[in-house]
Structures are given as C-alpha cells and as structure tokens.
Length: 144
Image 1 (tube, rainbow, N blue to C red):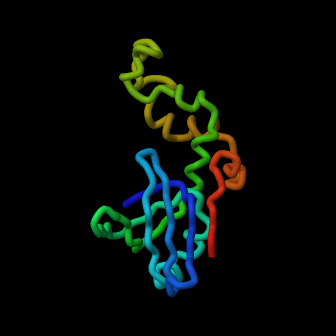
Image 2 (cartoon, helix red, strand yellow):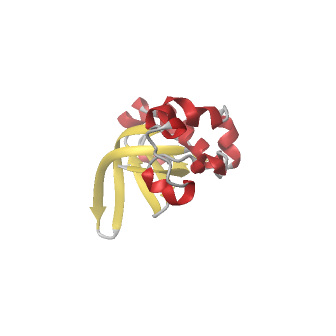
C-alpha cells in the first residue's frame, strides 16, 4: 500500500486504456500502473483525488519498480489537517504531557479521555470545504 500526492496522471494513446500515475510522499516519488478494468472501477478516485491511497502488487523489473493498482481510495479530505491551526496540537491527551501541562491527573476534569473524544477537538476544528485545500497542494499535471 502506498499513499501520496498525485503529481501526474498519464493515459497514453498507445497504452490500450492503461493509466500511469506518479505519486509523491515524504520518502520520494513512486509510479503506479492502473489497468483498464481498475480504471473503470475507480475512475472518480483516480481522476479527482489530490491525495490517493493505492493498494496493489509491487512489480520489479531490473532497476524499475512500480505498483500495479488493485484498489484506490481518495484521501484528499485528510489534506485539511495541513491547514488546521497550530493550536490543535496543544490538546493534552495523556500523562506524557505532564512536562508541558503540569501534573494534573488526566482522569479528572477536562483532561478525561472520554471528554476529549466526545468533541473537545471537534469544536476547535473549522468547517472547511475540500476545495479550500487547493492552495496547499500543487496541481497535478494530467495528460489524457
């Protein structure tokens, strides 16, 4: 499984319906091969995703390595996390935060884990439309 920002989508006329994707993550760039049947099944994800999760089979031929896709998931909504305010990270969630927040018992008061899960994080999170993420990620180069 690989997930990354979609840099390039290519569907050469001579490839008989095969689509080639180039994804980038924090470790580098990877090539994904999407056969025609997979393309038909996951077309909205392939053509619309900015952040794509791909499950498939790794193939290696000499120095060339690529992933042959079997399943794809559009994870573009997770890009919203990049635009959240930095104070989102200041929410204490366990005793390991004693250095930063003092030695309050996390089982009491606002630090109780059930209260944190019940919505304390969600009220700080602004409601945003996925299109607002466009400024954060460079546009992909699509050739088809």
